[in-house]
Each structure stands twice: as C-alpha cells, then as structure tokens.
Length: 365
Image 1 (cartoon, rainbow, N blue to C red):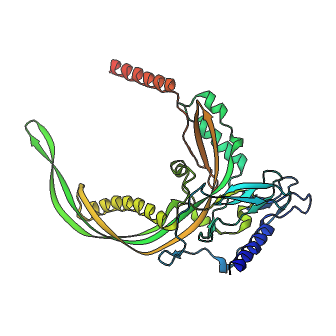
Image 2: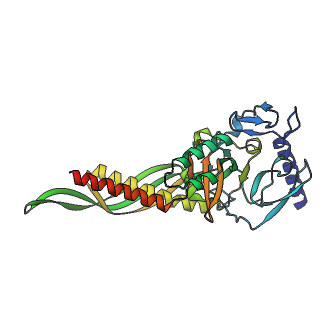
Image 3: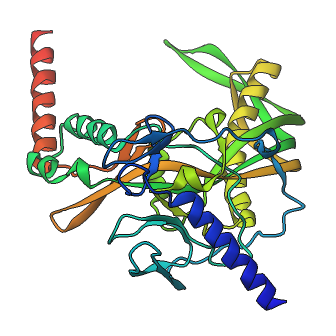
C-alpha cells in the first residue's frame, strides 16, 4: 500500500510541475503568474496567456470545523527536503513546509509536494494584484512620510529587494450565543458646594447576546512577523479564486505551521474581544445607560466553518545600526506595514519645537 501511495504522490507532483512549469512558446523561458493581467506572463519576451476559468464544481466553500481531520500544527525548520530541478538539474534544499518556489539557477517554477500527508491543501487564493514595481513605489512613499526616520536609513531600504510570498491564513465563521451579566451606570450632575460633580447610579443587568462571526482571520505562519503583516491588512476575500498551481507559479508559498485547531484557539481570543466591545454597546443601547461596568460573559460557538487560504504579500527587510527592520506590502491592495527606524535627535527636536510653540501661545494669551 505504501508503494502505491508513493507512486500516486509522484504522479501528482509530475502533473503539478507540468501545469506550473510551462515554457514560453516564443523563447522557451518559464512563464509565471502576472499580477497585473491575472494571467501567465513570460518576463523575457512579453508573451501572455489567460488562465482557464474555474469550474463551478470548484467553487470556494466553507468547510465544517468539527468534521476536519487534518488539524495539526507543524514546525518550521524541523525538516528539510531536497528538490531537483527538471529543467537544469540543480538540487536545492528547502524547508519541508515550503510548497512553491523558483529555481535559483535557471528560474524554473514548480509547486513542491507537501511536507506531510497529514496537512491539507489550500482551498482558495487571493491573487497578487500589485506588481513588484508598484509595491516598491508604495513602500518608498510610505517611508518618505516617516519624518522621524533618519535619511541614511531611508536610502538603505531598497524597494527592489521585495520577495513575493503567499502566506497561509485560516478564516473562521461561527454563530455565537453569549450569556452575560454586568452593571449599567446612569450619570447625573449634582451640585456639591460651588461645583457640579457627576454621580453614577448602578443597576445589575443580564441577558443573552447573539452574533454571527464572519471571516475571523488568523495568519497560520510562525515564520513571519504577525504584528507587521497585520498592519497591511485587510484582504478582500470577495476576490478569492479557487486554488490552482498556476496562480502561485513564480512565487514563494508557505504551508501553514499553525494548525486548524490552534488557529481556532487564536481566533476565539480575538472574537472574545470583539464580543466584549459589541456587548458593551448592546447594553448601552438597550438599557439606555451612560456606562457599563463588571461585564462578564460565557460564549457558546455553533456551526463553526473554516477556509484555508493563501494571501499575497511583498516582503522586504534591511539592516540599520545592527538591527533588522522588516516591511510588508499587501499584494492585493498595496497597503504598507512595518516598523521604521526612529532618530532620537529628530524626536527631541520635534518635542522642543512643540514646547516652543506652546510657550509662545501661552505668552501671547
């Protein structure tokens, strides 16, 4: 049985490589996915071709969380795999969870086999819509706007060093039913001597709050900096296309290292914060109170579904004063996220100018 499974995987890999590693009919170079046209492009001679339309049978759908079988997380760097390029014969070592790559020797593209049979394949992709040069322009404009960033740092951050990467994401839908209790506060102004003060009268409230959560997202990678990627969100999931090897051809694609169940735990943390805020508003509206205190609630989740997606980002980093700064550009919208170096002298100068202006205003008033 093992031999049969291995033969099946070899056949699947050969089919995948045949689909993604297409050669240009004009010059023989490898064609890659083109964000501007949404089709395939030869970067050497300009040859273009359209991708076939997805069949209705392959429509993107939500999957039932409780029925999922492949839910484990995976560790980056724990395993490696060797891939031999069929175009030039070069052998390259990759992280076991890396699923798409470009041969560094001849530029041939391929979608590599998964690290484990226990991991699932993505169901949909947010395609790149922002090409590399436009991402560089967005980044340069963003960095120029950072007034506290040293000029030397701005010059050392080269936008042409961006690498296009598809990051793994989980999205979760769920119906939530929360039982809550809290104190509703009612303010009134009362006079105390010569002054008016605010007094609050409190009354206990309780009830049931229901809300449908749609597309709560969790980045499923432990390799990338989640806080930086979050700064370039959101992604428009209405533009999803069904996963196909052609869409990721020519880009790096990560397979998830945060599994379905671990991702759901992270999603619940975010959902609870959202529910707390919405319940606060709900109590203020329904009890017509001025403030809410001591809010406690427990939540039941039902009809949980999920999607496993790949989303596009342009990633770059540079070193300044022995510290590495990473930047990310949303490959769909062009929104930039990252941390820029800060000049202490510029900050102090700005504070000094601010204090000077305040002093002058106080002097003239």
